[in-house]
Length: 411
Image (cartoon, rainbow, N blue to C red; front, side, top):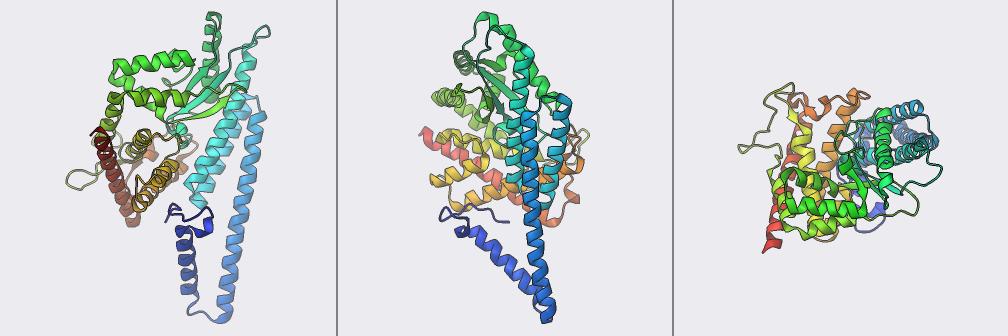
């Protein structure tokens, strides 16, 4: 399947992949009708048109229902109802993906739902604190990891940090309680909340001056675990912020990170050390021990190295967008990649994430189940195996490209 990257204008109808799809669809229809009597050919055309209309109508119904659920979540304060709405929403989203195979649609609706849920949970946390005599400092809730780069599914641990306004010493306990309520609110909805990267832990909440000091300290110390945590901040998206509070946390991170060449070198080395799933002899790498022995680790050998490589390239080029596909497009527009490489990257991103979502769909709503990220290669169709290998080769290519780009900037 071609992805719409090689655009020659802003209209979808002039995009090359759109034309390729239309031509292929037309030829398949003509092939089916080639030896049909005229009445059967007419019936086939009529049935095809009706099927397309039915799919379009079903998609419209899904969008309307999802929008209604998101609106209900935004107005809901009952934890049990929020949990039911979360389960219902993602059940519908996985069903839609099983029919339409649109990874971008899944992640777009997932983000909208997560933002609405964050607003509801944050408002409930404010209400639970009961501060009639004074106001709590303004807050901004930011997602990191998969949610931060707009690739969230309920199988992903939700990583969160909190930025707040200037706070007096007396507010410390209030902010601590607030961070815990945020964590507990998402967990009560059945979502997997990261036990470390969470605002209930002091090191993942703070004012802008506190965050600046914290980031500078981590950069100066250069400890491996601190740098790994620091790099998590490269993928971030706001889920909620109080009106009038627009803390430019992402700009703070990028400016400080850019000034430390050693930190960037660490990130590049980390990207190059990630396995792309293909061994030195050309064979695929499989898990060697444990309950998933003999299976292919989709996250470790494909999804993570791809997102990390694009993230590193985005940092090198000063991009602000968090989405991996949009980062690829922006790098293409800057002529740092050619069209063929950009299309291969988008193809790999879409295919790998569709693999992930399809397998998550098989076991959802058991969101703690790790089975979907481990593939049994011999059970995959030959075409899927070939696409997986092509995607892994593309991951390896972009890793090498990142290394060469950084080396070129060093000279």
